[in-house]
Length: 240
Ligand code: GLP
View 1 (spheres, rainbow, N blue to C red):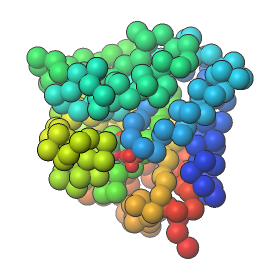
View 2: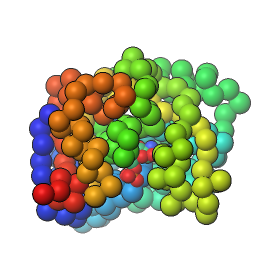
View 3: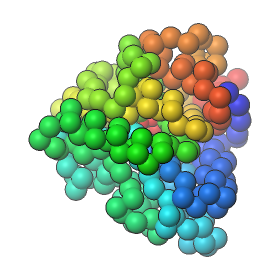
View 4: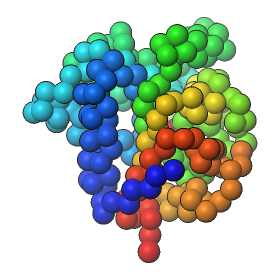
């Protein structure tokens, strides 16, 4: 893993954006793997700004998001589809049919997970995957204990994850109990990965990632076995 330490969240967003922009300009048909949550918001702002002022085009880009809450439809403001439309897709020239976010409200979640995994494989897999990390080391919504062999599946969210994400909802009771998430094996098949780590609440997770061993109880640890991972961490996450 390559580690880039930056001063601030702003720097973290800009550094990640430069890498994405460079990739898209070099390979216009890039398949991006995208993440939600608080961490990538600044990155998406930078991409929109660059699209508007610098002209980087996403016309031929396609994207696959990591995860979606079970039970929420894409027009629910708390769904990850809505998040992606609001923060990125509505503001760049990507065609919506090339953007893929798991559907949280299908009749058959298992079937949808398989279809999602198959579609991603058909499209040649993710070229550049953006990741955040949960305080417990989750990537996507793969909680501690998830098999490293896992593919896209329905997962149960830990209480601590629901609590961490309750800030986006009116109350914790509204936070779904389950999600659909790309699996660890799915994520590991990405050709290149950028892991963004920001803020004091991620300090322990970052230390565990850097110093701990590869173990299913700390999902992000598997990234150490990937040949092309860049971790970008801000000062608050790195600590003293
Ligand atoms: C969420 C998402 C992850 C995200 C992580 C951290 O639950 N499923 O994809 O990386 O938890 O979120 P945040 O960036 O808001 O801290």
